[in-house]
Amino acid sequence: MKTINALTLLLSLFIFQGVHAQSQVYGGTGIRYSLGIETGLATGYLAKKYEAPLGVSAQAEFPITEGILYATTNAGFNNIFVTGTYSHLVDDLHLIPLKAGLKYFYRSNLYLQSEIGVSFLLNKTNCVEGKKAAFLYAPQFGMIFYLHNNNYIDAGLRWESNGKYYKCDHTNNFVGFRVAWGFSL
Image (cartoon, one colour):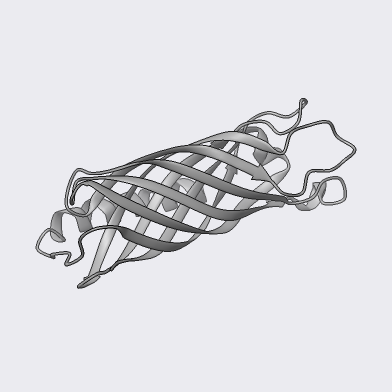
């Protein structure tokens, strides 16, 4: 219920801000950079043992069509916390996601973004047969809050799906929220 309330509030904010923020003008051109904090909620099979991810990320956006379409690269670190009932059996997941994709602005401050990549598991245990990397897919929608000149706040909501790391495992999915400070040079 908390998740549904938070998503409803966030979506309302995007719609309200999208209608009223058109008068602001972003002064930056060229490559955009952003540094962000990420959090979220584990879903599906992952939610049985894990609670929430917390991480950091750095993103670069390269203009294909200035102000409309950008190619993105993203790297970061995520720690997915184990629930208290499983803390004596498994460890937190430590992941390094590397992603690339496209970011499309359908309004000057509202966007859709889709990325694919690979997620590296840093704390793979030796006693379980598995792999250290998995395919990941992350669609996202978000909003840019323009500050002044070349600075902005980027807030996005996404669903991220990591493939399996162990043969007995399932995909590791979570709903994530990223808030980042962005700038261009």
